[in-house]
Length: 120
Length: 107
Image (cartoon, rainbow over all chains, first blue to last red; front, side, top):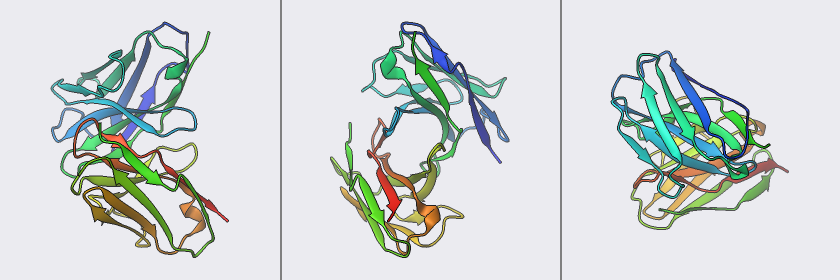
């Protein structure tokens, strides 16, 4: 059973860089057929897709968001990561990592989410 | 970006009721639509994919239909455990976008 788990700081100061990691267990991040995604949810709001990365490093970001996001992958650690620079209070949200399965065209596995608050 | 508009935003119904949620896409997305269920404090969970295919393990009281720009999600007989927020999601074009969600409550 594939499991995803987000990790990172729960509190970040304005203007700092947020770094989150998603660790995969029960499967290999290096196997093809999946895009590894980040999705966020502002308090009481809907789901916002940030972007995804393929195992060999190609990325796609939501162009509707400011270009402050960077997604990277470390196949040796079975992890992928999200960096968000110059955070503001508007970046306060629950951040989810999720697996997009290309065959079924679905987000089939999600992490439980990690709550990030931007505050001084 | 393709905008996904769900209606209603919230819905109150009784156990046993038939519940219907609609999702409208801002352009033709063919059959590129999934539905997710999100319970409070939890990650979303896939319920229906490709408009009408039931995810493994999901009860048959859930169903979906539609094509193009108009889609429908139905629970044939509402159960207490169905209380959640439901999201449609299109994947016809990047960026992937979700509807704003429909919060379902028990009357």
